[in-house]
Structures are given as C-alpha cells and as structure tokens.
Image 1 (cartoon, rainbow, N blue to C red):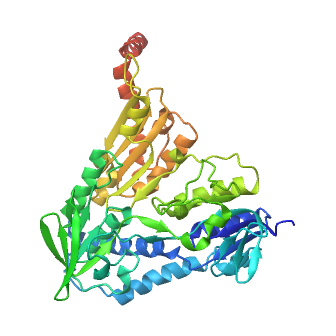
Image 2 (image 1 turned 90 degrees about the vertical axis):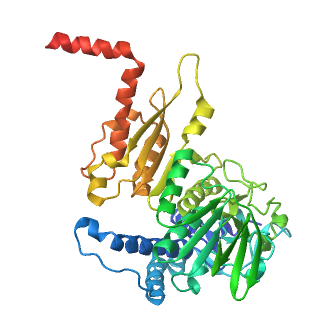
Image 3 (image 1 turned 180 degrees about the vertical axis):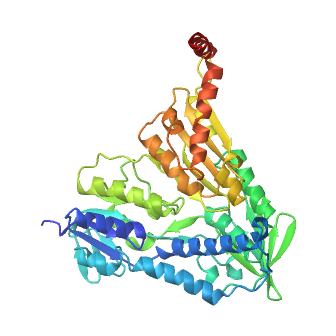
Length: 476
C-alpha cells in the first residue's frame, strides 16, 4: 500500500510549523500533528527581557543630560503581560498560523498520538493511521526538576511559569541553573526590582574564560548574587518561606526558579514501535539528522541541548532536504551562530580560541591559530550610546581563514550573522577588513577587528614588511 504522505511532522514547536509550510511549498503532501503549542514561550521571554532593558535605560537617562526620575515603582504586571500576549498574538496570526498552514495544503491535525508498527509503520491519532514515506520529530520539551531533597515539594517555578503569578517587587528570587534563559532572567528580574541569587555549578563552562568572567562581572555589577561551584543539597518550606541549603549557606527565598536542562516530550510517542532509540536527554541522530530508523528524522528540542529557535529551524531545513529528496545533506554547526540575551549580549559562531588551538595547534615553527581582538570602547557608536563594555574576538587560521568569533556587547546578536556568512563562504579575513560599513554603527567592530590582521601579519613576516618599506622609499 502506498503511503498517504511524503512527510508527517510530529510538532508543537515553531520549527515544526516552519517545516510543514516549507514542505507544502515544495508541493509535498505533508501532515502536521499539533499538540499543545509551545513556540510562544521564547517570544514572551524576549519581550520581558526588553522590558528589563527599558527599565535600566530609564535609570540611566541622567548620563545624557536628561532629568532623572525615581523608577522604584511597582511593576504593573497586568499591563506587561498584556503587551507580551499582544506580541505573541501578532506572531500567531502570521504565515505560520494553523489556518494559513491548512490553506497552504498542510493536513493539520490537532491532538496527540503515537507510532504503531502494524500492519505497517504509521502514526495513529484521532482514530486515523497516517502512513508516510518519512517522519520528522520536532517536539517541544519540558523543564527537568533536579533531584534535590525537598525541591519538588517546594513547588518551584520555571522561566515559563514564573510570569503567571509573579511575586511583589523586592522579593528574593533564587534561580537554580546556569542555562542561557536563567542568566537572562536573573538580570531582568534584578532590573525590575527583585533581589536575585543565581546558583550555578559553572557559569558558561563551554565559553572562553574571559567571556564567562565578563558576563559574570556585568551581572554582579547590577546586583545579581552569583554562587558558583556551589551544590544545593536541600530545600525546605518554613513559615511560608522557602529555604535553600547551598553549600554551607541557608538562603531564604520567596520563590525558586529552576532554569536547568530540558527533557524532550517523547515518552508518549511509542518510539519503540518505530524502532527509534532515545534517552531522557534526547534522540541520538547522525549528521543527516536521521534516527536509528532512517525513515524517521529529528530536529530542535527533540535532540536535547539548548532550545534555540533558529538552531531548530536550521536543523528542520536540513531534515526536510534529506527526508523529501535524498539524504545527502549534512549538518555543519560551525556556521550556525547563537546568542545569549544578557546585557551585554554574548554571541558566538564557530570555534572558541581554546577549541581552535586544540584542533589546529602549532606546527614546527609557529602557531596555526591567530586571535584578533578589539574592545568595543573604540567605536564611536559605543561612546554615543554609553555602552562601551565588550569586545570582538576573531579566531583566524594563519592562512587567513576564519575559524570562529566571539562578541560581547550591545547588539552582538545582530552583528554575528555577517561573520557566520563569512565562515560559511570560506572568505579570507581580508574580506571583512575591506568591507565598507556605515559609521557610526555597531557593525564597525567587525571591520576594525579584522584590520588587526595586517598588523599581526607584518609582525610575523618582517621580510615582507621591510620589502614594502624599501619600495615606498624608492617611490618618494
């Protein structure tokens, strides 16, 4: 019996809707299984981060010569949440809304189902058996509550549920975990008048030490108390308060937020029937995003790791090519940027300095990895805006090929895309150095950093430098 569909997508995420719309535009017959949609959580989170940023700017208006005011007033949460809901509603009514997907030819099925093996592999939902040539798992994920004595009984919040009934301003909030949303939330809550303690094992352990240190210093300078290398052993409720035992310290908290790892929603899908192996941390896939069943692909939060929407969409695009055509396209995460929306922002693409040195090391005579670095304070735009904290670091092979970049500073997430494109197109570092940029803008930092290549090249090649000097002496 021929399959009913070219692709069946088990979704509930923005990446799933993107995949469904893209597949339908390619004239594939596609079905989208839509359980509870979780794509709005990121938008709501980003909206509240923006609110914290505005609050901080209002406190700093005097540095521009404007009259300052007292901003220590209670936050009108009903108005804030109404604004956040309006933002998500606008996006919901966009081209990836369910009605528009259905009009584009996607068979949208709302509900939950599972894989069945007989009479042949299919996905069962609402009394139907959906048979497809390929399947894509693009499910959402849920926060994992750590196994800490008394934590579950204390009913902690998550970054998604905290905003439903936020405590009054000046309350003490304890955040457990150093995931990106935990760092962003710690800074935002501090800016909105809360006392925040962030307990992490290691702050940004996969980043260069100077990057992690700068982000930590910026958070602490705004009032976030960070307890690193600290183990939480117990949580208790006493007299309406929550107490957290962190190392040898007992912290009183009005609310606890768990901002740790996520667990993909996979248990109800009966993946065993599809012969798809999985674990609590996610689904293992090959570099073509195929699971242990080569007809079943997975992307985004289904794989575990960071829940970045753009990364999930990148993976969905790769999975679509392989599922609908031939499975030849491989993932290349080296060209995919990502960012943490603290203030200053952290953005990265490609290899860190430590990773590049480990991979390329040194040859017999000299280092193969060259680091170009430029502080943000050299920009006119940074001085105008009064936001001079940060830097741009470009990791370059000695042949001039870009290996990676790290940016810390205002609008770093908007700048890193140009560097990602340069890495993807294998452009020489001189291309960035000669790229015309509008002045004054934040993007100038990339050109200024790349221009350091010529100086370091001259230091490493004195013969060529002396030859040029002799040439110009002759030309005078």
